[in-house]
Image (cartoon, rainbow, N blue to C red):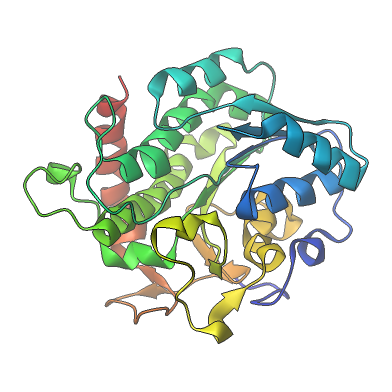
Length: 300
């Protein structure tokens, strides 16, 4: 599907005239980068917004309230790489949840790092923690009636499919970009899986490539390396997330990959560096089912 929005559209463009009063939203990683802009835009449209963050939650929530005049902005602690933290967030949530934006992430960690459970840290943070959070909040999403899940991916998903028999790089040489790419493919497959498993509950999910935006995400890479003409501002980078979270234009749509505020084409081959489109492996239903079953075992 296409919309009237595009590469240069901002969050305010996408949400012009949209009223989110009465909607409850969680944004992971909502205290920095495009996460805080996503939260601000949704709050400006009237939503009740909870920032699920490791740090700076209360301060950021207060700033968003000051900017938008919306007092229904708060925060709760969440470390996606720590299962007990995810479990606590889920346990403490009550009532319906209309929108879950799985935004938080880390990129290109230089050396192989494993969590206490033995998971590669990018896979654990970018995907597995979000999988546990999303599945843990299923009842709240179903209660909302027509809930949406937004899964942040990246053009880097073209670097790697999900290697289910070696997720933690125990049998192959670790590469920061392969690990990141694997986690970002998994994030697309999460959107496919949610839609396949929960559409009958009124829960739909889509994946997002926000584009190249200079944020703290590049702390391990020495800054943004993308050609200047392909870079976005933070409000432009968050626009597609906000579109999928709240726009009536995508009502009833799920299991797809969006970039520049439109559905991206599925590519038969690999993408050029800094190109567009979604790899076929990332929207494959069988891949999504296999990953769903594997992730379910891993979080038990």
